Image (cartoon, rainbow, N blue to C red; front, side):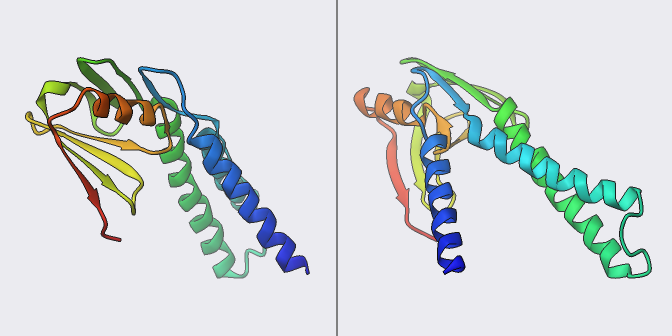
Length: 170
């Protein structure tokens, strides 16, 4: 019975998380919402606590596998925290009927005109839209970005000449 309750609660939490993170956002703006920020903070906590335990030697130091586990957990969640917090706080975009400006800490700033848009590809396995432009620039729009729906609807309303693909590969 406890297992069933745990599975149901986990499913509900994930469903709410996905629904909130895919909210509509403001017209002309792209940014991540609170769920991605919360995920980053949880990863940070899961990274700092084992690191603190390791530093204070508050574990069985005679068992080397515990040391490896603490270091591995701290490192793994630390990388996750850096990525999630980097996405949550530093990925932003602005768009209108003429162009898009998209900023990420990973690829920098991209300013592109819609008239130079070659293709739009939706990838189900990564849940993002890939926008490819004449300049060779590629913009990946996660479906977790607030405002991504309005952007895709705007491109459809404008009758974008870009070819639209749906990547069915897993």
